Amino acid sequence: MKPVSRLLLLGMCAVLSQIAAAQTAQQSYPNKPIRMIAPSGAGGPVDVICRAISQALSEVIGQQIVVDNRVGAAGLIGTEFVSKQAPDGYTLLFGFSGPLAIVPNLNPNTPYDPLRDLVPISQVAAAPYVLLVHPSVPAKSVKQLVALAKSRPGKMNFSSGGNGVGIHMAGELFNIAAGARIVHVPYKGAAPAMTALMAGEVDMMFNGLSPALPHIRSGRLRALAVGGEKRSPLFPELPTIKESGFIFNTEGWYGVLAPKGTPQPVVATLHSGLIKALASPALKGLFTKLAVETIGSSPQEFTNLIRTESAQWARVIKAAGIRIK
Image (tube, rainbow, N blue to C red; front, top):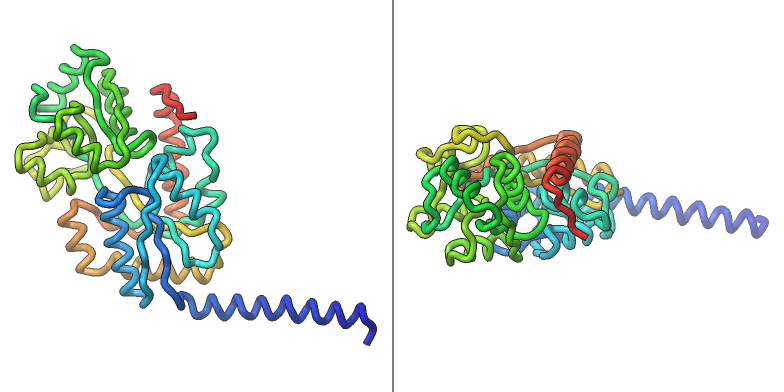
């Protein structure tokens, strides 16, 4: 056999060996622990929902899922990290509206494209935000708060878990809908933002209902309205934003994604596992207590959601004149 032919044969054998190894790895997936990146701080809504989903998925697929909090830049840091990992299904992203639909429109230097560098697997949950004020604020309804804010342009403020996160943009939407000028004060996470509200450092904020509920019931915070299409069963006496006379999205959404290039069989395994996990009575019961709705979607439906939300937030960001450099 000529040397060139021998080299060609060896090269073909090596390629076939790699393909066979990859196919074997996909067929046995998952055969080691999976890391789920939560691009948000511990204790906030993203972290709580992520851990519940990860536990339920772990029980379905029979492998440990380790939650890894990568905090910073409204979810950009954790999302960028996942976008650069090996596409083998062993590093996943627990994504949400901030880094997937808002930050890329806010920051022209965003180092990833959500739909170019990531593979959406399934939306898993949605949770309404609640409009909260410090008890010292003399407003007992949304309309009273709007009137108060208009009488004090630029003098009232609202907190959030950072520039570009969903609860920040809910506040900006409130400004636009109400025709008010309430100043944004970013904190490093939703939990410290709510602590600041309880301390009276700021006047108001939007946050998940579940973490706010104990403080509402204790009187440390006052709730004025809840987002979403209907009242929450956890707080049925609280009106919706729509019932209060304003129409805008005040709901967070969450889903699981993988690095671009993740093999389709791996994506299919994860999608099937997530759908089964979301049907778990234990998870549904926990989410009911957290005022979270379970949602299982196809990869294409999740892709469409990200695309639609991105276009919506681009319009809001332009109207509010917000930019992060």
